[in-house]
Amino acid sequence: MTLRKYLILLAVTVFGACGDVCLGRGMRDFGAVTSSNWHQLLTALLDPWVIMGICLLILFFCSYLTALSWADLTYVLPATAISYVLMALLAKIFLHENVTLEHWLGIGLITVGVGFVATGPSLTVPARHAREKSESAATHVARPKRTRSEV
Amino acid sequence: MTAAVTWAGIASIVFTATAGDVLQSRAMKEIGDLGAIRREQGLFQVVRRVVSSPRFMLGLFFMALAFFSLLVTLSWDDVSVIGPASASLTFIANAFAARIFLKERVDHRRWLAALFVAGGVALLAR
Image 1 (cartoon, rainbow over the protein chains, first blue to last red):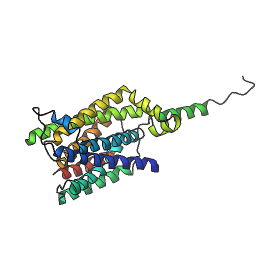
Image 2 (image 1 turned 30 degrees about the horizontal axis):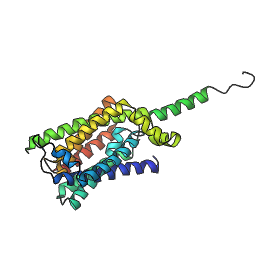
Image 3 (image 1 turned 60 degrees about the horizontal axis):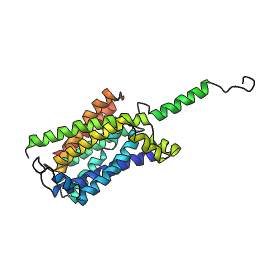
Image 4 (image 1 turned 90 degrees about the horizontal axis):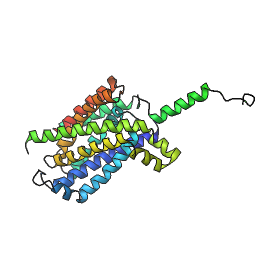
């Protein structure tokens, strides 16, 4: 794991948490959406908080796809789970939601879970690019260059 | 909204999010390391390869469904309930799906990580 890869995992964490909190803040202004007032969902797409949430979630998505291109799904998801801790803290600060002792216990469990996966390998199924590189390297080694006399 | 309706919303988020995650993960493994492709062939090639993958587009469709399910369910209850509850169940569903469909080696460390994170997220939802 390089520093660049850790930064991408950090981007997944921060953009994901901030995006969800912005969406939560935006949808709070609209009340319950049901089948009779579903068109409110379209109006919600014009709300500044929802727009900001969508922009942050697009950034989350780009960094998430990048992480998935070199790491397992079962590595990326727990490794970026700190975003739920960040989401709880942001919800307390900006949405004034209550953070209880149980919440702090949950935060502790998530941190331990992230610790389990962060110390292991990030990839157990080789990605195509890495496979192609190793295959071409193997071919290069197995098939020595022909000499001028052979040609 | 009743709790049953909220949980139905959460179930639809979990199903569509898991399907989206698995399809996207498979598509990204087929395409290869995006960072390496960008360095070697440029950003345009990265975008072209990603958007021309049918599996990626199907994954995107399921993720869009998950997003709208989340948006609707968020209007029924607090973000601090729906976000963590749907995420904790998605963790477990993803671990099973990754093992079955992506053939990932989910060893005891990854199962523990998934269970600890899912438990922590469930506590955050209370």
